[in-house]
Image (cartoon, rainbow, N blue to C red; front, side, top):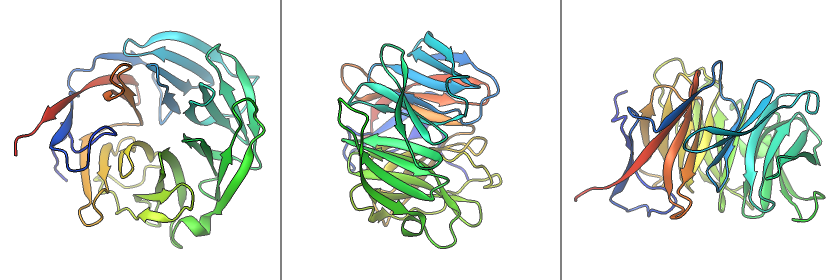
Length: 301
């Protein structure tokens, strides 16, 4: 499949769906790089202050972007003995949340790691939007919706949805969940080992979009399948050696898929601290981290 790999077609959260603007990834000239070998979909997340937190071989590393200056690094063992499965930023208490086995930990701005919440099962993926935290268990066996008081880690379980209510009978499971405003996107592993992205309403889990099979060229067999939301119906999708894709499901009748890069094990978009618009993207490869500038262009009609 041939596509224009330089264009991140369509809109970011600040752009409208009928905008004539596109975003261009200057993938040939990264702003900066950081060598971190032997990576394959290492969990990572950004906050609102140009910080990137990544988990790499039992070590948490907090970077200042775009320079990749290391602000904090710590080995988690023996405090946390199991692997970190996912990371998200929780703006209510201004901390990162880390999932490991059946436990969620918090990393606060004072670099303290604390127990945040004990769960009932093994956590596969976590995400946060508005005032809710969503927890996906065991490749999508169930998803829970929680609400936590800002001054307490005693949460209220609001809803539980089971696998049979979320995916189709021949699907294998759910790998990654990412929420934005009223929507939550999920990477669904299909019976033929290909991926699709389904989008749901966060309050009812009614399906808003059923994605199409992502048209990858290699073997369709990667199990990375990570998301980053741009807006309600537009997501970046990273799947290791299969590449980085922009999946736009804004128009149900006009599904769009764009191949952006050949290798991407994980991705994060970075907002400008002043304009709050997306300004750069961090791409994780097998050998390190690269941050690229995103240039906003206007197309003539």
